[in-house]
Image (tube, rainbow, N blue to C red):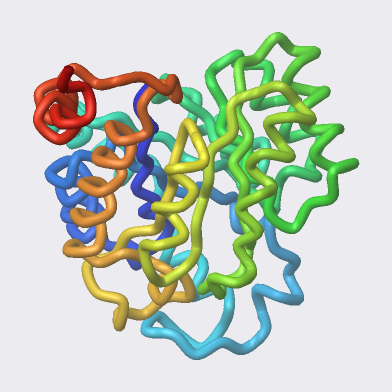
Length: 279
């Protein structure tokens, strides 16, 4: 089975639908299988105290001004849905609250996503699982006991899912990746496991691909110097192209693990071993 590659747009569109469409097109041209966004009901996800607190941004001087500017509404998501269908690429979003999940339901996306931050929101997880769509569940910032509870909810609901090993630092240092958790999660939950990476380079994602992941998610951007907390941990166009190309090569190179003589080796063997078997 081919690794399902997800280009995480998140909020790297900076509230501009034209930037979002450029990123969708980039994902499609690079060979990604899907693009992913994030949806929040600002007044439910954040406290009034936080929203009223100071924050300098291109849109104002408060946290509220920044967060509201980054949040797409119905008009933008209708255009995202239309454009993705035009290009022939799947899209979905991680909801950060129940109202956002209900909002997304109108688009009938094929997949759902549980962000690492939300894996402990059991009410939201039950809402997502009730849709019985294939869900990607990121495990960053979580203990095994917390992952246990999330897995139980999806299993009880009969909702297909896969876990995504994640370390929620932005950007993540390579030495913090702990990719052996992929094996741990596979063995503990007997399920497919992907990798959602926040590193700046490509090597860790390549290693994850070689460990048998079923999905791979990376943030993408037009330019890492753009405004935004996720930009530094994102791949620019050249990096995304390199990632997808290399992952597809890694998939082909892994093989079935059976030790045997490849048909292409036979004439080489006859040539190089001929003197050994001469009578």
